[in-house]
Every structure is written in C-alpha cells, then in structure tokens.
Length: 89
Image (cartoon, rainbow, N blue to C red; front, side, top):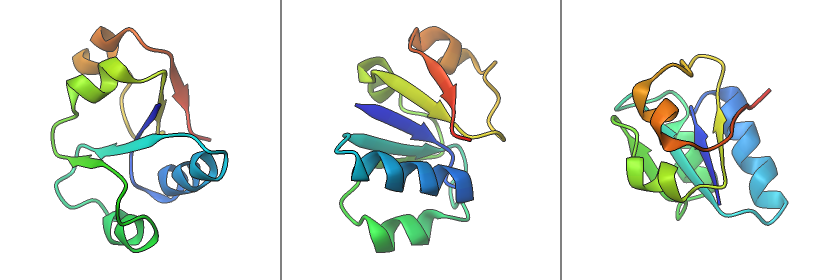
C-alpha cells in the first residue's frame, strides 16, 4: 500500500498513476481543504483520504510514502514512520 501526501497537481497525478498500476493508495494532506480535494473526490470517490493531521496508523502500514514537494520530510510523524519516503515528481 502506498500513502500519497499532498493533493496538489503532482500528488493527484501520482495517485492516478499508482491506481492505474493496481496499487492500493491512501491520500493525505495536512490542509483541511486542499486545492485538489474536489478533483480527487470526483475522480476517485471511494479512495481513503485523511485531511488535517497525517494519519500515523496508515503511515505505519504503508510500504512507501510518496511526498509532494511542498511537504517537509522533517515532520516528526514522517521521520517516525520508518518507511521509505520518496518524492512524487
């Protein structure tokens, strides 16, 4: 399972790609109303999505965490998850 953090243009593109590859995906964004949320819901209404605080349980279950460029890799929750952190670009 992959977690994609950031619902901007690159995060949404990454989600589309991973789903086309047959991956299980969970989306997250630290904003309560990220710009790409409505687009995500229109394209993938059933995709699990966490807004606001990042979900530690999902991060701990992930095989990889895909992080958008605007998200700091130094966040304690990302450092503590112990999973590979990769960029979405």
